[in-house]
Length: 307
Length: 170
Image (cartoon, one colour):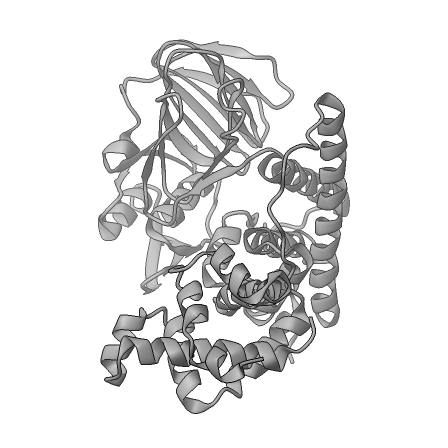
């Protein structure tokens, strides 16, 4: 082998940068050697990923962790709850890994507008995830949502949003879905929407009607006045919503960790907080509920009851 | 050590466990799945399960709990994918769809690459790290080192040959 010539060449450098193709390299070194080089190249890409820290992951699992209750709960209940949680995760895994090719997710405080293949628009709120199958989209307009999103659906076949809390079906309309843990809230802004919460009969929503189910209890139907969800315009609005749902939303919006062990998480909040002003947002949410908050550092907040 | 330091249900303890094992677990799952996003998801699901069972897992066994759980989740997924694939084959014969060549990366191979990079001659390593780790273009490297682009490419080329030789039979 003319090792010296080989050593003075540059084609491997060019191949790594994509300046020459795999086939060019194959014709220079042969199929067998090419395989070795391809493996080296791939492992270099992988090495980079293996070295990445996992810091962001903690934020994303945090939203899936159920807050630990202070009360003593009988073992029987915890067992049922954990089985339910496992089923929920298994269901979610199935949905997300089983069928979807395209996944879009947003980070804290981020919003993203996605235009689907048929021209339908989805605005994804912060710390939410959307998945759908591009290949079968034309036959089957189904997508999976974890978090909150606003949909403007192009006319056509049935359009389905699946969540771990149930599914929402429409023909062509504008609506908002918020599915976080055991909170499921659907608002119809235009057209007709069919909501099928888990283990419930399907319900039809007409414009300015909202459907909400908390903790798997009986769902409630209400009238609303907005013509689009307020978070689209930089505000997050709640109507008689349990505090823990509001906390999750604050955490997602501002990338926070809120310590709320000593306050009553079932207190209800009605109002709207801005998405770009933390101080004001905290004041708006906690003052009316008689809760003091302490900013421990940039992303940690501790709550306690006012005296 | 006080009682509370052993309680996995405590936010701080849980977070500590996450920081200690998350990366190792994710990388371990990468070698199992050969797919980074999947590995990351499995790692996360294992931690969610740990949280759900925080009362029942002993802190001394937490590492093996996490690794076993993630591995079981992975095996279940494989099982499920097999069912789906069988079903798809029944519905329509997809055998004519060509799959691109898949290269699996084993831990041993990765360790070898790591050692080889560290033992590259200084000039080769310098260029190699700037290009592959710091993601600089050959042109930028040539400006930084005040040598020609051609010289950068030669060093890079040689580095790759050195790595190839060190790797030996695959």
